[in-house]
Length: 351
Image (cartoon, rainbow, N blue to C red; front, side):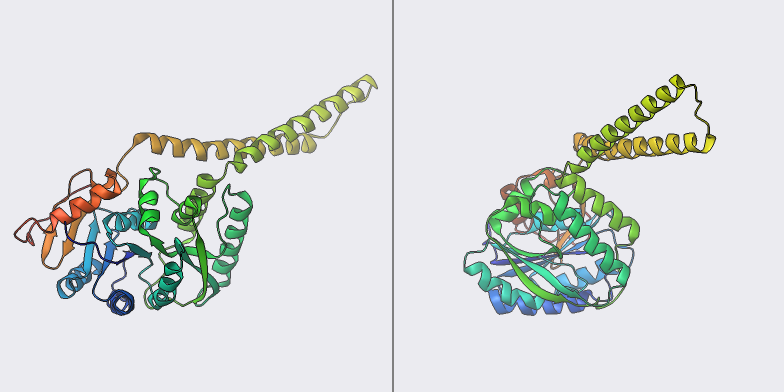
């Protein structure tokens, strides 16, 4: 087994061809400042449709520390991040996006904090450059809603940008859920977690990969993964609706005893519509949780790797790589890249 590097930098990439070379240059410079040559940069191509993989291949050929991971299809940011963490071997692991909104140079401030005993050092945004008022407002609403609903304390105004000890990463990878919310999962693990305030930069190039639809899905994943409060709200809505319905029934009966009839088609329809809406909301909330249980019960692989590349060598990994334990994954990676002749013309399809 080859010696594990001191530091791993994991960066999920989706259509990042415009800024990927600059990201790698800055990340490598920051890593070399704190770890010398004992580092690796893991670039995960999450089903890009541009030239992202070609650039990753080029960077891997030039820099021995670059490991390219190409997923079989687009799995989404959280699973792409999980795939990169699964391929990491470092004693310290930095998870960061490749769009350069989170400066890699902050690693020089994170490492000393970790050396003083922190298990996780996470970036906490004090300012967000280049983002619209709508994005800022919805992000603020999301974090404040989540902090009230979640069963664990999840710091506000944080992303997945964080430096973690190996033991935290191994615990994170041992969690079996498919609908992943990494920043919440890391908070759930506990240990000593320290915030590093910073100003988030605008994107170096390209456009955001999180449109409104993905933002809503991400928020639903976060809330349903770390809170059962919506189910309790649905229960209370049902009880309140039943109480109002009972009061209306008593009112109607009393008026009937007094010889008066209740008139007004509009009021009846309004009541029916209101109760129907509440019922549909409650069913929808229950459906969100039930749907996630169904997905978890299928036990499909979290991600599927098409190619893993270091230098000019493509590695073959076991089919069940994504389901292995963290230690077994590192053994499989070491074995793959020390097994003999390069296989640069082969595509290995693994899971």
